[in-house]
Each structure stands twice: as structure tokens, then as C-alpha cells.
Image 1: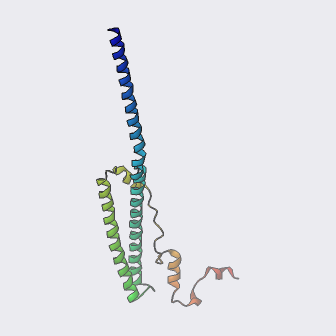
Image 2 (image 1 turned 90 degrees about the vertical axis):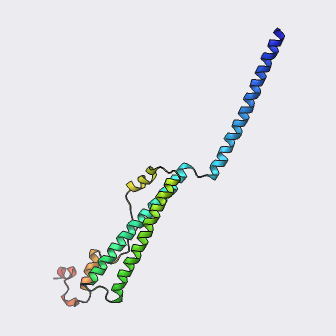
Image 3 (image 1 turned 135 degrees about the vertical axis):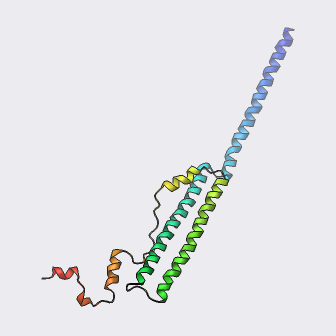
Length: 173
């Protein structure tokens, strides 16, 4: 009987070792397979960076279009009372503003689509809120001549240069 218990005890240990070996081999195969599947799917950080960059670009485009529309409308209003474009050129300002408003509506629709896609893909809303909290630095809007230096030049346009007061003339004795 002692021989049988030693033999069954040894068989149990061998079975346990075989089981542990097979589990270790299976675990190694599963762990080796993970990096291969991770290469085909974007990582969480890559996905976050992609959504944030797309959202940041759309927000920047929205701000640029809003600024350009405001400047174009302002130039049209100035054209009513100053030496600014007349006739067809003035009407072109309105057409440009209308075109930019259509682009702005498209950008806003793309923003809503991005938010919807993010929600469907399980993106945490905090990722997009982080971008909203950032300061939006738009590219320079199209300069349509509304700053102070160009206003001075526009005021001088069409006037007799003999009657313009220049700062350089004050320095000459």
C-alpha cells in the first residue's frame, strides 16, 4: 500500500507539473499574441491624440471663419460711407461673407459629427473637453484692411497730399 500511495503521489505531482507547463505555454502564446493585435488597433493614446487633433482643427477653422465673416461684413459697412470698394467689388464682399457662412455651417456640422462619432466609439467626453478648455489660436484671418494703419491709408486715399499732416514735416524747421 505504501508503494501505491507513493506512486499515486508521484503521479499527482507529475500531472500538476504537466498542467502548470501547459498553462505557462498557453499564457506565453496569449501574451505574445497581444502585441501583434495591439499593432493593428490604435492604442488609447493614439486614439485620444487623433480625436483631439481633429477637434482642435475644426474649432480653429470655426474661429477663423467667424473672424473673417465679421471683417468682411465690417468692410461692406465701411464701403457705404468711405473710399472703399464700390459697385461690383462691394457686392463681392457680401458674396464672400455668404460663402464663408456656408463654410461655417459645414464646419459646425463636422464638429457635431465628430462628437457623435466619438460617443459611438466610446471616447470619454473629457478628451474633447480638454480641447475646449485650451485657448483657440486661429491663424491670421484674412486682412481686409480694418486695422488702424490701413484705416489711415484709406482716409488719405483720394485726398490732396499737400493738405495731409505728416509727422515728418513737424520735425523739419
